[in-house]
Amino acid sequence: MSQSISSSDIKALSIPERILLVEEIWDSIAAEQESLPITQAQRDELDRRLAASEATPGEGAPWEEVKARLQGRK
Image (cartoon, rainbow, N blue to C red; front, top):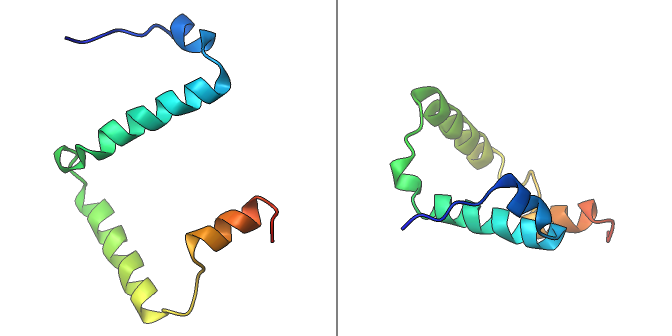
């Protein structure tokens, strides 16, 4: 059974509660990602990025490092 949430219901939530709601929605979409087809252009772009990453393995930074920098910890 589907439950409907109105925009006023969402606005009544605190910001942390809304963030949790968005995370739950995103997780539910990610769990069904096989049902989301990608276009050939998207597939080509992913292949291009993967090839570029493999060609220059020393470039870039791990996510935790980037996240720390963005949060001003580093």
